[in-house]
Image (tube, rainbow, N blue to C red; front, top):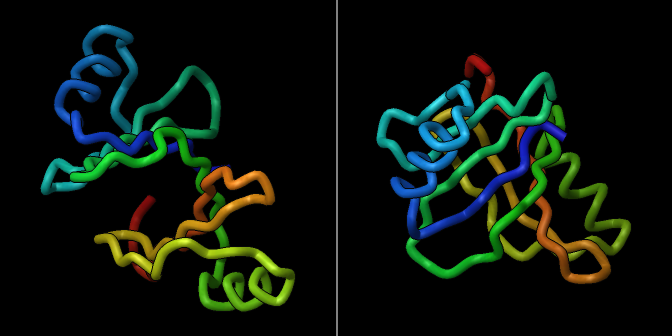
Length: 116
């Protein structure tokens, strides 16, 4: 897992909390200030915050794949339920899906040439 994501309407407040109160170092932040990743200890898994306008489920594990379209096709063939369309970010393409209990997860691929 690359990151666990918090989706929140209170982006600025959460960023201040994790950066200033908890002292987590910033790994990456989008230029438009709607997505940020923090380093958590020595873990290779980042804590990410995504600004959203709607009430959403909070913590969403994100799993990196090399080819998002192929992964979607393979997962659908196994009965996985996708609950969003592919979303294109500045550096990534991603899609949300559910496990059998309805927990939200995310598949993503870095766009070719995007640094991470």
